[in-house]
Length: 311
Length: 311
Image 1: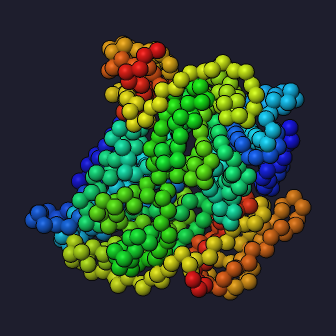
Image 2: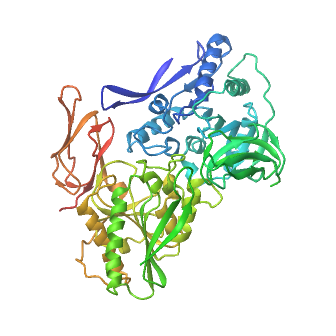
Image 3: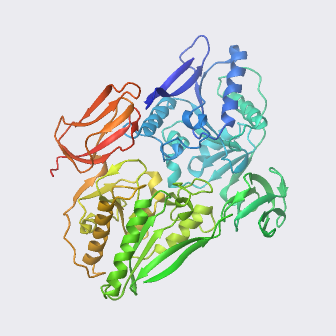
């Protein structure tokens, strides 16, 4: 059942509409649990589009197993998705930094408030993200320290490769996930792949995890796969590798590889002079869960994140 | 006057980015003034250029009081200015959402850290800023409510209004907010324009800064005494939003006094020119902000009104 959450007229002969698809059993008892699957807050993060499709397809193919309510919000930033734009076109603020939104704010702040209102009441929300166009990410759940105790046990069920518990930051208090967690809706922020592309393998992996979670919640009676045991990290065991010079990054390793401390991960080259301006070495031994995908780098651009190393 | 490169970074395929500080006087760090941080802040760049011109003349006349150093940074981000982009060309991030910065972080965090290091320790920090919503303002001084803000000092600029804003999470990474946390009295000066040069409000801004520096005993300058400012809490401004979308025809402008029921703007059908909506003033007051673009969406804030005050 397709429902419109909020809409606003655009200047010339078009309506901006935020829609969801509600999937529920034929007959309701009133006791059903509810899960919300949210994606597309950034217009260049597309893995969630495939996951939404696959969830709907599998549920509709086996409707008899569905015992709860599944709300799927595939396109929270429809104009961005339709125009290859990360943010909301013609709106300066990052849509995932304006929650809980505002009934009195700009059109987009108003839409954010209505989206949040609609999700409230869910027993669980899963906020699906890809990376941006610059970085490739392994499927992971990102959880702030303050919500770790409650969310890590759920995150372990979603079939991600690892769970990153990171330090809290004031600026992150305006994300959808933070707002929902504060308002009593446990929410997992999931990240995978790279911007502007769909990684079907990662998508299928997460779909399995979502069905497993639904089964644990008593919402799904069909067969599910046991999720993989993720590594649970803390900030202390994640090493960040930045470019120290500007130029063109050419990797020597593959995303997802294990590296040894001091191992060359790639070079930053100068295509005019033919010089190698930096050999990027692994600062720690470990698993490269983030790797630079877009070659042009400025001093400071993130090259990789490595899981490993002592706190 | 001394011109110094206060931060530099070699970008890929481009000449090195050199952020320049223009220093006047010697001794205690009295005032730091920052112009364009975003690439479309042309008015902010222009105001700084006029201020540097004026301070140079004052210094030549011996009008910088002893033991006072003033630094003006006209542009932090010519990499964006020169290609017509508002945000950082490498990854579309906003340097003014990266403070206090991180010297080991991502590119714009490093730039913010470099700038913050050199702009810290001044008694007064003045930023010519631009707002995230496009439109025109009455020239004003804006301060964050951090607990350290001082509206009485802001009054010494002699601008007609001082606006106090309750910071949202995304404001906590601006230069203004972080200056205040690090004990610099911080003021954001908003003139009428951003992308275009407005001579009248630019002159007003230069005069306001020179007046403030005079009143703080930093320079000697004979100036008009300016206004006794009305101090307004941002949440007390009355927003007026559109019910219809279409072509926006503005009748009233920032600074205009309005009577209750007076027409402010019309929204026209973009195809046949019919008036779809007439926006009228719900109260008597003065226009603080107005939407400027020729098109408008439904539910957009097109005016903010200062209630009760009189011209």
